[in-house]
Length: 208
Figure (cartoon, rainbow, N blue to C red):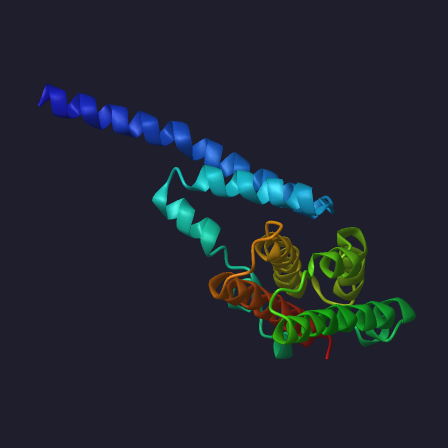
């Protein structure tokens, strides 16, 4: 009995020791995202830190993998229920941002077409050229200004999902020199493109 109690106490202490670290990593990632982590390297580092912490606890690991980003999150309301300020929506700044975001979505379509015609194409330069994080966030946040606070809590998640999708896409499409892209890797890149395209669709639905 004493031995069992001792083991149980060790387990509880160990769990308490890990839990704050996971919480700190999660809070740090969210805070930095809100405060403008705008570089791909910075975003990837924050995401990796959070995932590394969450893997210490099975439940938290699932939360990291299925973090509720996008339209499936309980915080993302149905676009038809969103409260939109029509005057702000019609402003030049928001309309210009909408045009830009539609352009980002078109860029994803262009990459899909490129890979369909050449499965060995290097789309890395286009990703870096078309998806500048600081400009992208500015455009997405400009559209957010036309939405009420409850809606923004959900669209903020979609914004983070978009940034994460782009980061994952850039990593997955990289190839070692002289090594052809396998069908498996090609399929993975195409899935990343589909996911990013859907994220843009999810976001644009709030301004239609």
